[in-house]
Length: 196
View 1 (cartoon, rainbow, N blue to C red):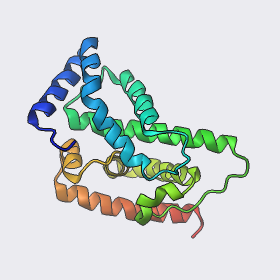
View 2: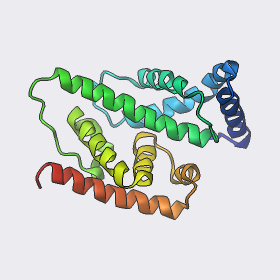
View 3: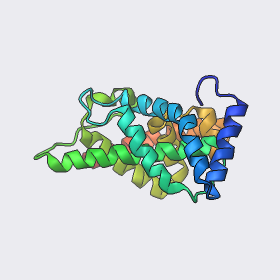
View 4: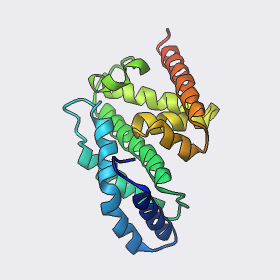
């Protein structure tokens, strides 16, 4: 995942994850510095698209995600790609929870249209767009969980196509096809909710 992260680093993370799953708290403590930079990269990837005045900064996002990941100890971790795939889901939840909280405190917040073709410009959109995307992703998950996972890992986690394919144990072409179809499905769903 990270530039220069070789097989030895991947094996180290996998071994620590598996030891932690087995109840070794010291492994979790050793895992922290190993994965922290990668989690920050994922957070920066996503936060680069957020508003400049967003109350959640990459470091805070990483800390909140890491705290939530601590609850996943008993999950059987397959490898580091699996860990970062789950991390992208957790970051999605942190960001959406934060957006929903801000929306609850606003009065008269109007949802804004989110174009998936403009995902890199999400930072110009409002919290309502993130919430609308989350709602659409939840609907997609009900009909096709794998396509939802592809969107989570690519959009929220910044994982590369090869990493997503490895995590989902499918071909690179399948991931590309799922990404394309998921974008179309989500766009149609977002338009439908807006009455277009």
